[in-house]
Length: 213
Image 1: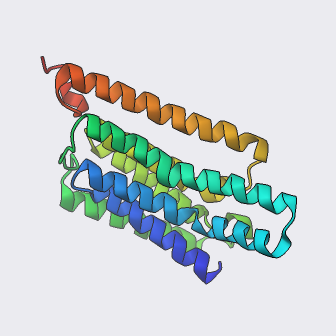
Image 2: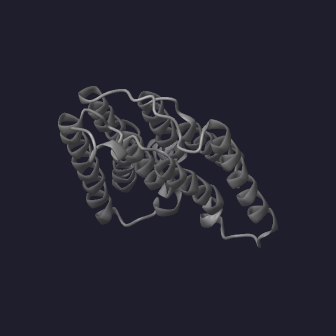
């Protein structure tokens, strides 16, 4: 694995872990944006380099598609969730298992995938990032399962989707617009549900929605 790619994957994994540790909704959204911005950076720069050196229509299309993916994940989706926070509240709800146990759990996940990657047979070049993707996906699922703030859960869902980006970066171009529209639709619907529930119950904590009156 190239040094640059390795550094980017380490950075995006760290952003995912920090998102799990975020003290409030604003911090979680920030780390979501940082994770997405980092994880797609190598592919974006690669397409930009091909565009500058090649100057052909295929390179131009690849660049705009890659930029659209990067912008959607790093800017548009976090802004949609941030808009939901503005309409509700910046919740300071902590992980259900506590900050210390969260840190221990994240470290255990990282150690598990490190051991797995070290002792597993070498993978083809295009699948070298699979262990990083699996680790970020696991952390994202952990975030969703240990939080009660609906907006943090939505941010965790986006982090899980971003974690798969290195594995689906070569998807057919015809699928990309559908994926981007679907992502935006899920976030808009999610934020709409949260804001309506907040208007009804006065909280973004999902466990209180059915009790508060």
